[in-house]
Length: 269
Image 1 (cartoon, one colour):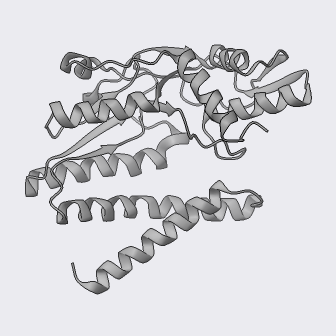
Image 2 (tube, one colour; image 1 turned 90 degrees about the vertical axis):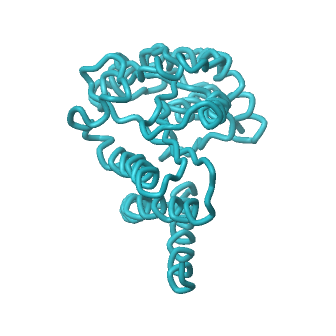
């Protein structure tokens, strides 16, 4: 690539990093947070393309592209072939499209240049070093922070969004990393592979489990006026299991390790 193009790529990557840092920080007002989030979402697929171009240029032997699971609510366990088999869940649509575009980009490089790019689609990930920000954390990290703060303030109740009936699948981050290494050593094909635990839990049961791990003894109040999101998210991990890999960390064990890390990093003060 020429120097001018490389320089422009560097500018875009720096801006993407600046936006990520700003969105992870504190003190942003609603309008400013929305503005920066929009710019970050628009830049994210461009950053994906830049990363893939640079990997191809350096003749990387194998690359793993991870994509967030976009699923059809009517399918109990989503097989790889069912991706794009129906409409995307509206609250995840924009994020899912960006990730699906990255999967297709890896497939295109494999077809056109013979690059050994491999795509995997993990389920919901949690673990050590998670983002516990009050505004933009994911479900496990967000609940862990809120329940810890409720325990410290002796709050009698904690509100949890939704009815508690949706079912979710989770995988511990260390297991995901192990699966990615396994896939790079044992798989080479255009089709992406699902990575998950193969087990699901209702959001109500998850909330109570996190409360137990944190040691919060108050009452969880489920707010049905808040959106539930997708009724069910479960990936079919049969292909990966057939290759010889399965998740090893039970949910409670992963939550206990995450909570210990949460406190060790000073997040729980």
